Length: 266
Image (tube, rainbow, N blue to C red; front, side):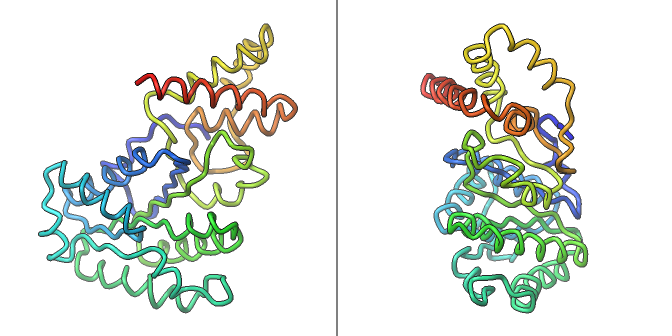
């Protein structure tokens, strides 16, 4: 499925499992997570972030800039910040997530927060991203599965993040199919159609007269490899990797150049 930028933050529902592949776009990640939390906190929901200290500090600063008193929220237990690496270390057995440990550590925290606030909870996790950075994809997928099971039992919304570059060759359903399919929505890696614009220019550069026909195929396709709702640009990249494999590398390399050039011009 292909979706535009989903209006999920204002109405994130129990059971929604969002994911953001942010690559090196740290500012986009901070804005997305902060908006997700702010919308929930303003609705009376609690917020749990399992994040690196640097990201947690950035989230707090961004929430403060939106007028939220984060000290009051943390003192009241409405905003809970856990260190991702320290929490992950409590879950692993032989570098693989253990179901009982996960249920005790993460499940126990989730259940306690929901007991305190039946109005709802928004959780954010980047332990999965740490596992990905360690080239431990099976462990990341297993952790996603454990989160999914906990969601079904406890009913809350979840936002996961990975430092995955959508222009890189690893952004391919052959590599990431199971990971993408573990989520309900993939959030756009960038705002304002920047990636789509870069792709359009790259198609013209690389494919020339064939570009319009390829655009017609992109416009008409769904993405059958996953039930996850995908932004149009990311869906196009996955389609190119799957259906135009011999030219996709050249197209996406050129798209990366255009994207970087547009960003530096801002």
